[in-house]
Length: 283
Image (cartoon, rainbow, N blue to C red; front, side):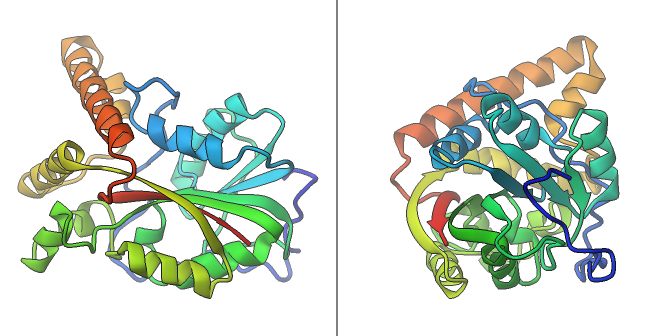
C-alpha cells in the first residue's frame, strides 16, 4: 500500500461479503486489455476524459472496481506523478492485476472501503455504479475517503433512460446485461445527479458516450450471449489475444473498427445524452 494512503487496521477492516445479486464476479475478469488514447482502442475515450478530469490533481488516486488493472496501468503510464491504488471485490481479477505489475491493489467492498477518512485526493470508477445494490452507499464511501476539495470521476451507464435501447428493452422485460454483465441498476441522468448531491458531491461537468451505433453493437452483443446461453470469461480484446491466428486477427480488427466508429460518434455528439455519462464531481 502506498505511503500516502492509510488502510484501516486489521481489527477494524470490514472485508467483502458476497453481493446479493446472482452474478458471479469470479467467473468473468474485466480490465485485462491494455488501454491507450488510440481511438481504435475500446475505452480510449474514457481514458481521455479521465485524464482531463484529473488535471491539477496531485497525490493519491483510488480506482474502485479496478478489475485486472487496465485503467491502473494506463493512469500509471500517463500520470507517473500520481500514487494510483486499485480496489476490487474479485480475488481472481486482482491476481491478474498483480501479474501485470499492479502492486498497489487491495481486495475490498466498495460499500465498505478499507481506508481512513479523507485519505485520497481523487476517486475514479468505470462501469461500477450499475453493479452495486446500493449506489448511494458507494458514493457516500467515496465522499468519506476523499479529502476536502477532492475529485470524483466516473463513467456510468444510464440504462434506465427511455432514449436508450437498453432502457426501452428493459421496459419490455428484456435485460440481457443483468444476467451477463451484472447490471442490476438502471440509472438515469437525474437519478445520478441526485445520488451525487446526497453524498455531498457537487457535479462539475459531464459528457456523453455510447450513442446510436454503440448502443446497437452493445445490445447485439449481449443478445448474442443470451442466445448462446453462457458468458465469456474475459473481455473480447483478451479473447482475441488468446485466440491468435486468423480468427484472433479477424476479431481484433473488428473490435478496432467498432472502437474507432464509437469513439468518433461519441466525440462528435458528446453533449447529447446517450447510454453512458462521464461525470466529474468535487467533494
